[in-house]
Length: 196
Image (tube, helix red, strand yellow):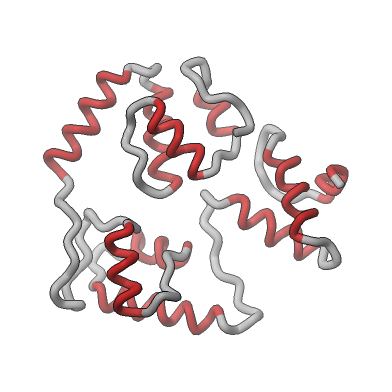
């Protein structure tokens, strides 16, 4: 972690730092919040925690209420033409299901996660078709898949190599770590090469 997360942290300080998903999950576990979900979901839970000044009892009640009343359990479809429900998440249950349908090379990509969010009425078959279409595109070396805003590390590494074709991944990571620990945006700058 760039900074220590404790009950003194401000919302601005939290948002100004880059957090790995594993760090966000650890924070949620430490403060008895559900640690499932993607990075934006975890960040939203923690921001709510900070805004409520760590009134954990109030937050726990709200989260339990949402779970009990609004979220149905995840169920594998019996027919691929079934619509994906509002409770769909990139869970291990669905990862296993898609691996059975597509193959062991299946994984959730930024594109497919974004595509799901943008299409509220989406069948499992259409989801599979979109994933396979993107998979074919990825075989073209000139194709650059979208990178989610929550995965700044991936965008940084891509930008680093676009500007430093002769550098190694080890050097890129060293520059990323330098940038990650600075306040503000975590975007590549030529000044980051000072870390080398």
